[in-house]
Structures are given as C-alpha cells and as structure tokens.
Image 1: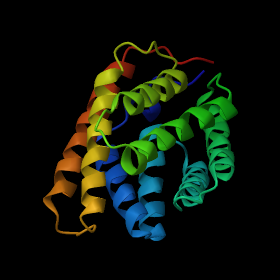
Image 2: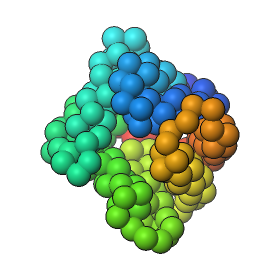
Image 3: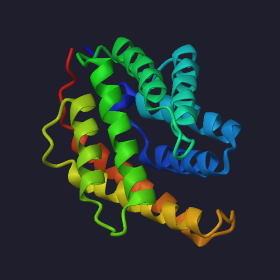
Length: 202
C-alpha cells in the first residue's frame, strides 16, 4: 500500500501546475527538451517517485506525447503503449491496484477529447473533456467521480486558453500563458483537496 506521506497524495499544486504549463508550451513549440524537463518535475512532484523511476517515467510521458503530437496522422496506439508503461511504473512504485492498460486508455481518452475540441468542434462545450479528465482522476486515485469536477474543469479551461494561444501563433510573451498557469495551479489545488481524504488502494 502506498504511504500517505508519499507525494502522490500530498503533491505541491503550485510546482505541478507551473510544470504542466511549461510542458504544454514545449509541446506546441515542439521543444521536446522543455517537455522532458517539465515531465521530470511533474513526475517527481506529482507522484514522489525516486529519481531513477522519475527519469524513466518522464521518458515514457515524453514518448507518449511525441506519438500523439502529429495532426492528423498521429499514433494513438504508440501513445497508449508509452502511457501503459508509465502507469505500470506508477502502480509498482505506489502499490496501486490499477490496470495500467486501462489507466493509459483513460489518459489518452482525454487527449483525444481535447484534440476534438481544439481541432474539430465548432462550439466551446467542454463537458466531454471535463468528464474524461474526471474518469482518469477517479480511476488512478481510487475516488468516486463526484468531487473531481472542479479540478477537471479548471484544467479544461487552461487547455482552452492554451488553444487560443496556439491559434494566435504561440507568442512566448502572450499573457494567456500566465493565465493558463494560474488555472493549472488552481486545478491541482482542487485535485489535492479531493485526494486528501482518499485511502490509497493496494
């Protein structure tokens, strides 16, 4: 069983939110070194793995994102395979009773919902994206879905700001990056509140 003192349950939402913002900026600029550096911070801060597993986990996250990134000809199977390896590592490290393949499927599901909203939909209805985020949170943390929507909605709103930034040319001095970062910090603060009373499975 994962110990409650591990940072999967007590992560720093400020560090995590800032790192995810950096990862998104790197992703859209195709600056994979920045994505990898941010992924290292996210895995270390978000899940509290020891350094060897942190570095390996960050590599899996990078490879998943690289497989997903091309549009429209990406490789969802390769993305899921990379994230399955990540979640297998997480389950081993944290003593989680999760199916890594199922966790990877849920992870890539929200990637897909975001891409549909970003690239293919003409409205701004975020409900499917929010629901997909809730499902992966609920599964990985072993929580009921109720109570997770505020964290998911703030993260979805950050994605929409990122989408607007991308559509306008990915300017590094755009104020929307700072707003996106604030929303991600808010999202992880709300997620931390939700997982605070969770009993880790194992």
